[in-house]
Length: 166
Image (cartoon, rainbow, N blue to C red; front, side, top):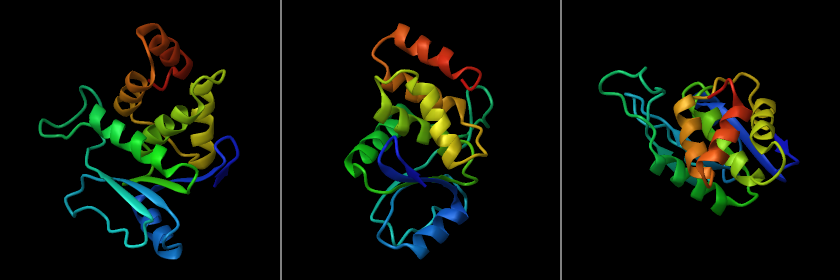
């Protein structure tokens, strides 16, 4: 979907949808692939550029003892990848395209809109237009807030703007 606010094509999808789109449009998409599946990471032979992140869909206090949580480094890698992609088409996927990918997509969109009034809320609205079924992973959202705000008061304002999602 073309996002006028970003002047960019962006997709947030589940694994199967992402693999299909990559096959249909080889060489078009910069892909952020979030997967920690026992069957292995999906293959994207047509990706223009590919970033693989490996973490589970878990939140603080809700994971299995051996679960892999998203880290600040994961979010930083995704932000760097998206920034280097500029306005080229960007696809973010996780297994179902509902939790990890929508939360990460929020951070990527918010990064582009920072400084605009109600940027946090606008970023969620954009992600909702791209992927209407969303339940952003709160752990990933919180990491994005920490990395994309300059101080505690800015982070508190953003958490309030995003309530009840965080």
